[in-house]
Image (cartoon, rainbow, N blue to C red; front, side):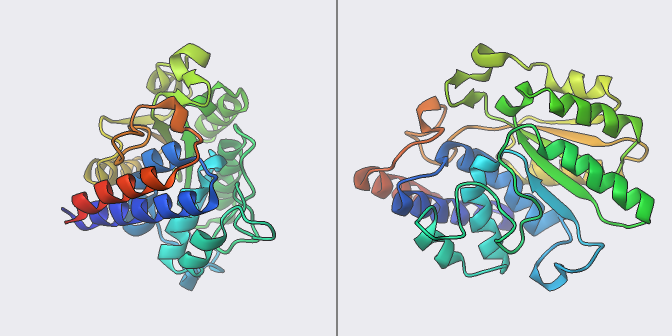
Amino acid sequence: MDALTKKAYELRRDIIEEVYRSKAGHVGGDLSVIDIMTTLYFGVMNVGPDNWTDENRDRFLLSKGHCVDALYIVLGEKGFFDKQEAIDTFSAFGSKYIGHPNTEVPGIEINSGSLGHGLALGVGMALAAKMDHRSYRTYVVLGDGEMAEGSNYEGMMAAGHYKLDNLCATVDVNGLQISGTTAQVMNSADLGRKFEEFGWNVIEVSDGNDCGQLAAAYEKAAACKGMPSAVIAHTVKGKGVSFMEHQAGWHHGVITEEQYRRAAKEIEEVLR
């Protein structure tokens, strides 16, 4: 097992504990997106607590903000704050680790969670970098269900128009959302073709839970000049926990003690 894959499964273990303790959270999406976040934070992006005030730090925006449970775990592991505090107090009364990203938490660039806003904000940050001659790159992670929001397409159009080659969007395509499959609720396929029509460099990742494939995709994105890049990452909702995989019911679900023990055991078996 390579280092990034191992890290992603260790963070899955933390996510399961965090969601179990809080009796809240969006665990299915957390488990589908954690490989993307792990690859970005520990293999790609130039950002951490040591350079958080540096104007040239890379920017990360979680547009699918309901999966902040996973982001808190990643930021804690990165050293922005005590990860155990996030695990212990997520969604608790008075905690700053609430159910959507907020800038009271170190390492978070924007408040998000109103779906469809993250890409437009990323376009603004990438355009600002061009205007200010800054070297940072902006990474935005969206959900495939979120692609029903029309503001995404305005952002896609603007990014292509301004040739923002310092912008990389990743769509976590797990095929499910809270009320069913994305195909049934609001079919957004073929996403790659849609991005291409707006002038984006599209990189399809057949296994978006494979950190190696993701790392290669981000390398291609960084090498592309003259247009923004979109990584279309085909993932599994609930990845790593057998009874959660491919189940829309785990978009948001409360984990029982028995389920917690079973999930933790499955993840530990992968890490052995």
